[in-house]
Image 1 (cartoon, helix red, strand yellow):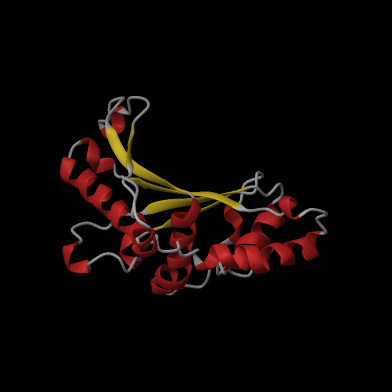
Image 2: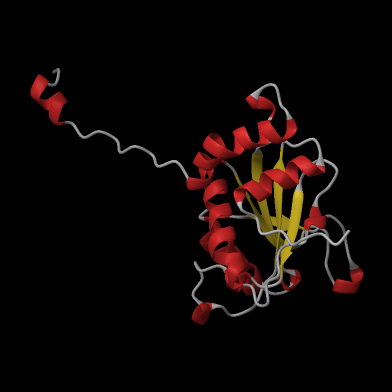
Length: 200
């Protein structure tokens, strides 16, 4: 039986998906700015953010399942995505770790979640770092990717400090399509990353 014309009119429509603020800024302002700065002939040549990888190493996880569980819950709350467990690739006798032992977890963010996480990192998390004087701009590799470390995960407002049992650090890697370090640096500056002034 086909639905009537009246039924078609009253059928609920899907709500429009909100575009993350930084993604919209990239399209509207950052791409034109990069084209002007570096003289690209085509907008597709402008570097873009491809993915953000968060890695949390928990050495105690090899001997304490609760430490790994807390790391998994922490990354899930911060990113909104279930982390993958990382395992040791070889035996390390000094730390009593065998190949295959769980030693941490990681999350790879792309698309809207990537932009939303970057927005929260810049506007909410980094300003809560004690005695914050900017991010060191030395974390770029030759491929235009940027890596930074955080000593305390408690700077993220998604976490309830009363429920935090142990302080964990994490590494954050931002993978870009930039071919040079200066292009990647300018891209992240345009997003609002608070880099410290280089003394070199």
